[in-house]
Length: 600
Image 1 (cartoon, rainbow, N blue to C red):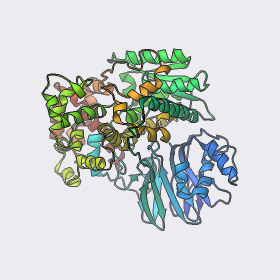
Image 2 (image 1 turned 120 degrees about the vertical axis):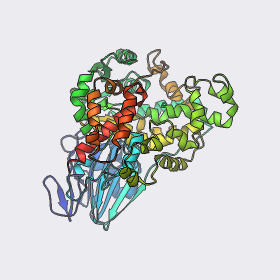
Image 3 (image 1 turned 30 degrees about the vertical axis):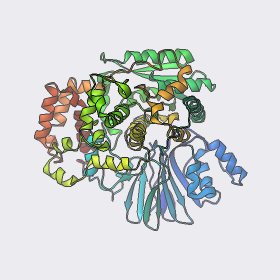
Image 4 (image 1 turned 180 degrees about the vertical axis):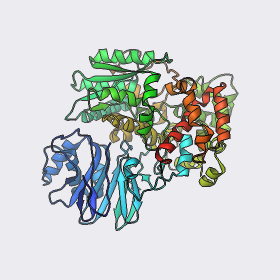
């Protein structure tokens, strides 16, 4: 994990210092391992940069800059490209980058600091403003070392966590620390800072595009993304879950000439349901493309032994997926870089909120559809889900309906709070935040509106952070070809009817890659898989849960009402197993608070 710091004051060990400004960092070496050390400077040392991530198109940019007269000191560092791009294009240098990055750039003549986060938010970037001082890092724990940065929690951000399972940008779990949003730029100059979005997804449907042309262009863009992301001075492997997304990446890697690709699959013990087919399809893809395949078996004992390390990988409360921790522990034994299928769900539509978007829209426009005994007309293809339409429609507007798909809405959360917590959050509402976000989407397409919300929140605030934190815990870099900005921008022009078609999720993507994959994989039946942690909470982790959420431990922060939490636990353990996600959400918060806040 990269750690960087800038401040006005004395020099510190491991930091570069000039004009009262200090920068220092630690970065996983992937490109130009020998000479690509940071900070990196331009020819006269007037511009300096540190960054976390990778610039995939650095070769093309380097050639372009050399032709324009720039002189490079290193052999092929992607970092050095950044300072010369800034010289050439100013703040517009970001538009030229294809990659994942958190960048800090110091312009000495103008005494100007730029912080920037990549378009999709693949790499994190936190900062704290301390008067005329700004500190920044890729994780809060690096900032909390600073004596002026308080560990006081932010109740409003935590209120959001109890619905979203993560802290949403621009907040952090700490009042003194903020984070840049995906595609955001911060400029710090003359003791002041301002932020703006330098890139944002824009859904504008082009109805003239045919499905055939769309599938062909998606295939072409994805292939070129894989080509660029395979660039590395160290071996590159790939995640292989047995689904369409990761299998497509593996197929394209092989098609681009990669030989003996190392692939990695997570499998579960404890007789967990609906996971055998994942292993079977992953093995089929591995056999088809002759990869060097590895499997990581995870049992309850493994989770129990590593739970503290897993929760410790996040400096904020987090109750999302944790399986990446175990798979990257295996990957780290073989390669430093692995390509993944991350981002495809959020681009093409897969989650319940995506699947419900079109039938909800149809039912709102034609209420008589709900009077039919079963799915009909535009509801065909949504069997098993359409009965929820009445309940969701009854909640109100778009934001209220979306809140109905989370495990805890504002009222449910408030029922667990102490008077002190209720006073601290005031009138803040996660539903109101969602409503404001929907208002910023320019598309009328119901599915694309749902995708917009997830691209702005779920993807950068939960999906990508768990991949980044849990992979970097093992010093593995994960690259997501689906999040190449060219592919993102193109898919945003496609209407929702191409993405989910009569219940077929990611339909246009499946059409694009169908001939790359084994028969049966593309349209394999959707399986209901309960996350292992849910089953373990009910059985093996019961004592752990009851202790973590005991009145004595809850009273330490006076944010959650002990009696209300006890009633929730009783409901869970007498049979309301659907409450598992809420229970894990509370446990994760408690463990975070005791690790990061109580210590003060």
